[in-house]
Amino acid sequence: MNFLSSPSSFGPAVAPISPLKEMGAYEALWLEQGATFKTIADRFAADPDAMPSDFVATGMAESCAVAVLDRFRKASVGRFGVRLHHAGDYPLKLRDARHPVEMLYYCGEWELTETRCVAIVGSRKASEEGLKRAAQISRELVKADFTVVSGLAAGIDRAAHTAALEAGGRTIAVIGTPLDSIYPKENRDLQDQIARDFLLISQVPVLRYARQAPPQNRLFFPERNVTMSALTDATIIVEASDTSGTLTQARAAMHQGRHLFILNSCFERADLKWPAKFEEMGAIRVRSMDDIWSTLCPTSASA
Picture 1 (spheres, rainbow, N blue to C red):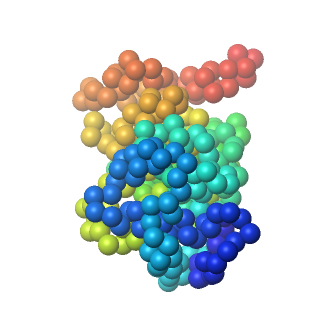
Picture 2: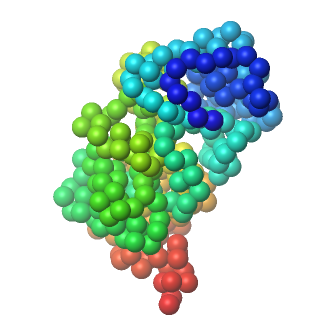
Picture 3: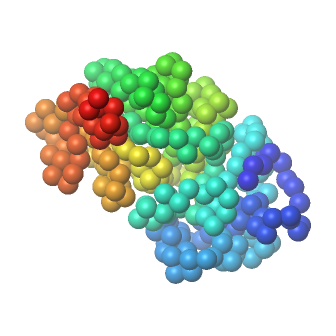
């Protein structure tokens, strides 16, 4: 389900599902008063076989789809695609999320989601040591043929993506904005590179985001962490405060049955309570890479 950001016919298609129509319908659902990931997920949970167009008038769906394409064209978003539940290559592992998304936008090589993926996440205002640790772990994952996943934020995320690229590895960015937005602005070149050569994913509704003020749009960032966890085999937390959005991903990993790794340096900070809490829930303390390999690659770790 790939498109160029220019209008096309909404008439009868060869396939029984029209991706453009479903994209527009999903965007329309997000324009309804009070729409959230939970309310939309609950709607589909009550009608498990439904597609977005089952809830939205055709004219509204078409209008929203044209509006999205227009925004993408103006932002120079070229070829992009969508992944819809019940259609094509929608990853069933996304259903492990508490409120699974019905549709994702993406640019790049979707097949990267089928590789072994590990997320590296942490603070935007990271320490120098934290940045170094994120880069080192990223390089080690690349050596072991894992795809490095992060959120393309400042700090730990950027360090993880950059190190993976410099090591000649693969990376996926799951962003908290639509495809036509960049945050932070200094990541523009990095976002463009990942979208062009690897994989950029967004679950953020384009039209709702455009109509809201920044304070409301900030809520999309922790929600993308839930999806990032669902797409990966494991999450590694490099550093985070007790109020960090990173902990949303930690909770999601526990709920989804994913591995959660926490660097020992987090435990060494007397002011943090969350590391011990998640260790009690089953998270793994990382004193060396062997603690990661023994879980993700038990055969090679024991060799």
